[in-house]
Length: 163
Image: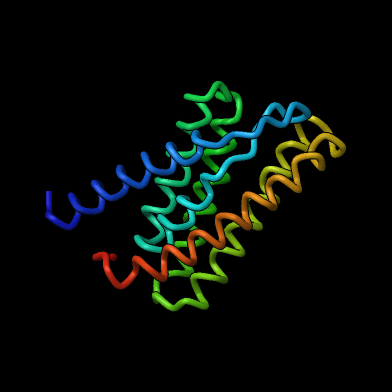
């Protein structure tokens, strides 16, 4: 295995663990959808912004789904894997050129995808009324992630070896 591949796998593993940890640290249950609001989107977005779409996809999907399983929300893990994985992928694609305005655009689009993804799944599972209850929390979650990821990216992007 090449040293580059080893580095990418190591970073993906680290960002997956950090995503799971930040997702677990603060959880606000939403009884109407049997889900919860968390702060993990900051790490999902930062993973993609710093290390590209592949790491964003893995850290976002796997880290967030593992947090669901560990926290007792295993019924959400398949949906989370897809929604958060796509979120990290989107941020990573926009962030490839390492421009602050593209990182911002990517995090906004990634956050919107997360909010809309959960809205769609929750509507299908629980109805529109229950799904709408979680929208403000998901918007807060996305906004927190956007702010933290962009500030952290600005601080770390010049100090870390990125891809």
